[in-house]
Image 1: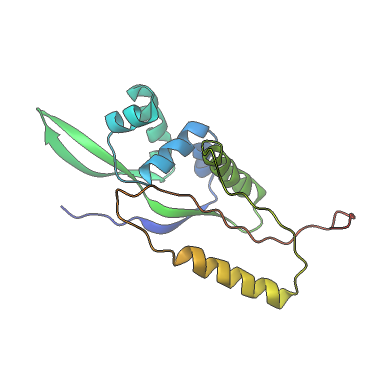
Image 2: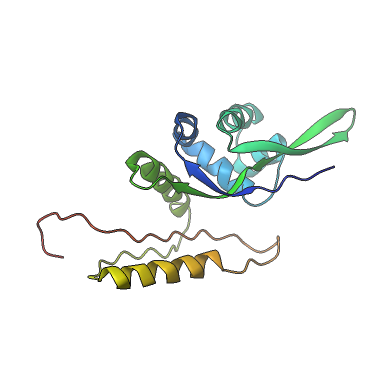
Length: 171
């Protein structure tokens, strides 16, 4: 059996991507599949919903190329399919407000389930060179974070550096 390795990055840009990200339950499925491949039954149990609901939303995600069957195995005369994400991280196309909104909505759904999230928003005045250095440092910090074993709890990390639009009000 040849195991497919997920792509590192999925750039959210197609209508199918936006359709897939339009429903909060599909965000939950994508985050659940970030842990490890799972069957429809395992996902339904873990997310507390019906198998038919999971199957429907997995189909939409598969049509968008965001989920695939990673492997199958025979059990009691049937076949169990293990679904997995096709990517490790999602990004929005630069300047695409719809992609940014879809990604932030997915993260907001996850943050809302944490009893003690760290959410820090700060506005800084930076030169372009300072902003470039900060961007590189943040990218290295998150991109190079070492993962623990499969039994360790999962944490989400959201890092954003963006230039604020001029709203005419002092910062």
